[in-house]
Image 1: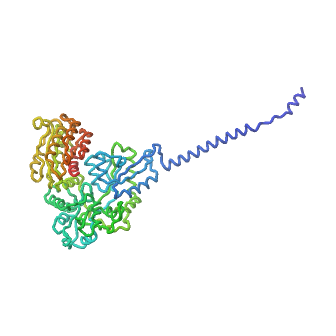
Image 2 (image 1 turned 180 degrees about the vertical axis):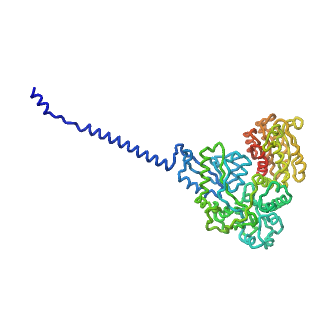
Image 3 (image 1 turned 30 degrees about the vertical axis):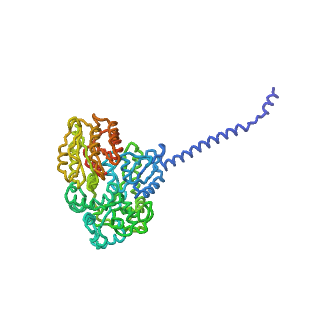
Length: 592
């Protein structure tokens, strides 16, 4: 026994090494994993702190910009995007597309063609508040917020060098001189150059060329109490103002270019002051700079045009940033648009805009070289007309050249008695707008119809004043407007078909033959929309186009068929919430 115990106490068992190694490896793996997770978390949190949380992914903020400013806005957008801005968990990428303002306006209000223009924008940078006003007149719901100016550019008169020197060396030239100088025989004699003949200024359509629209305001501003504007609605009905507007339209060159760019190109391509058929054209300073340096996408002319800053109240293009609204604009885009607008107003971005030829408060530096541009100090600025008056000026211009024949078809259904705002009915607002337009008209042709139900026997429509020259039937038109009284139903489509047939029979060659419908309700009886389309197709004649435009008041009109009707005939659909928007919207339609 004792030997056995002794034997047992002498025997020693060793511990195997491989289990220890395995445990060690496992511990190292666990510690490595924990360390990797910990470091990864730090890096992730650090990245989140630096770039924000983009859990909702990337979102684009699309900005449509007039070509005058598109490159500078795009440069600012690239700078902002490099900072990886985050809004509502969305990483924002700004996309800037250069599109002319008239195309943006028409496409936003009449249907955006994504195949041609890409996806609709969330914001719009244009050259003048006039465009924002027009958008508001046609459909205020598309304005997301109050536009904010991001830069400025005065409007100049562009001429060949010898013409500019004559204007600056003589008795001086003011915008308010424009109606008299351009309508006088041998207008260049005023500036010591009688051998040059008439002083002709190209005035491209003010509804598509903001520089022209602003110069017209400056030319009429002399009739305001202090001579600086603003032009008001009341002024447009004054005989001296109407006479000045008439002289301006009558003195337009016979072969007037349709755009400011065409006018600049024609002036630069010809040798001699009047070789192009006109002597000068209004243009914003930045656009003249871009033209003379070839930054407009063309080639710099061999002989630059020279900009003359006319005396008196000078119009200024204010380049507003216009936030847009609609079912395609989400909350992230709304907030991103606000932030990008603020970014554009920071000093660095303002200097970028200045480098593109625009005026800003952050710097007085100007791009060099800048042939033909003096960068004169702006001192006496025009006080611009309000939104409604601005539309009325364009309408007066459009009718003054006697190029339109317009018949207005007014809804006199019972619903027109409903409140239209400020204690007035919809009908009261319509009558005020129509009578104001008649009183402000310089020339042109206008007629008046009404529609409801059983107004002329079984017919739901009635002619009140036949379409003819306003000057010869002004009182009849005013009496017809005053006699409008709400009746019963809204038999719209039958009435449109009847007026279309009459307009076709009385078609005036060489003019824009137009029908403008003012309505506040859905079609109620008579032809259906499908039947109306069939009737218009049957009546249509080659070479006798008739545009149908509609001003829809309030929430009830059938916007889808009305939009289709206007698009297929080449017209325009405008929508106003209540009667207060009728005046500006009607003026916008007449000038479109």
